[in-house]
Image (cartoon, rainbow, N blue to C red; front, side, top):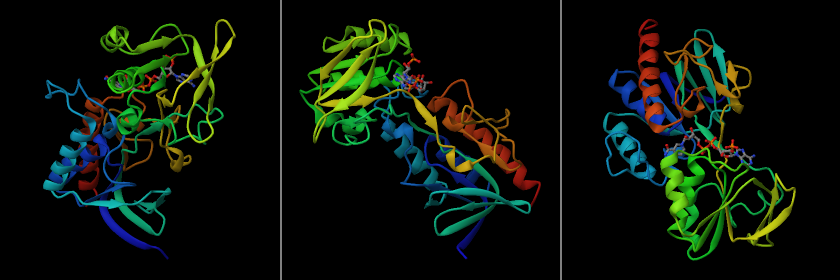
Length: 308
Ligand code: NAP
């Protein structure tokens, strides 16, 4: 039998949403633990500069924001444990969170497990990951000083990554499958104005090549049906995110893989709440994630109080 730890609340996920839920819940006096796989972070930690989080007129790096949230959570007494939840099961009136060699029993759960970068699923992507293929310009951009790189995607992430890389690499191609960006105008205009950023429109990568490290990416033009090869030493994939809901099986109602909640962040199961990017929501931002998390913690507090 695995070791069982009991708490009133378990928060799963240590990104901006999980940390905020922890800060609120511990201040409500709940007995809780916050589970992360590799320590606090999440997608926020990989953001270069967050310019639209209120209160930071000069912007703040994702890493700095996470460090501050973690410090704040620790100051109020949130306890962190490292564990990957593999399954969630109902056990009487409580929930059992099954991890590798340890289970957690709790009255309520807040799922703040976020989303992971979407993969291109093309030849070379997996083999050359870490050897030219990256999903995080802030993490890996440093290695491409004065080199030529490609960013794949046309959303805010892709354009932010392209702008960040333009300050390091000699040349940055942005490869987008349409001829119009999805990114906000303010970011798009900056990228259009950057001398070393060049757009490759209507194109999708079909293969990433290189023996030991990336040397090129093969592109297919959707309009002309022509294939071409772009010589690059780095390929930064920024084509959106997929929710980390695989471990839930059919426990909760999902929409396109994201957890459906009501305005109190209640999921389809009693005592299970969700917050942040994993939630079915019209806007995935740090500002909305922390708002979700505050509501989720408040809902969990009321749910637990009624059962004490
Ligand atoms: P996103 O907005 O979903 O954009 C994904 C981009 O990748 C789109 O341009 C999409 O093309 C393209 N794409 C998707 N699948 C593809 C495929 N298989 N092959 C080629 N291209 C593909 O994702 P995101 O940019 O990561 O942003 C996620 C969320 O975070 C958004 O809500 C975004 O606004 C937010 N965000 C905000 C900021 C900010 O406010 N500063 C910064 C970063 C992220 P189509 O355009 O043709 O669909």
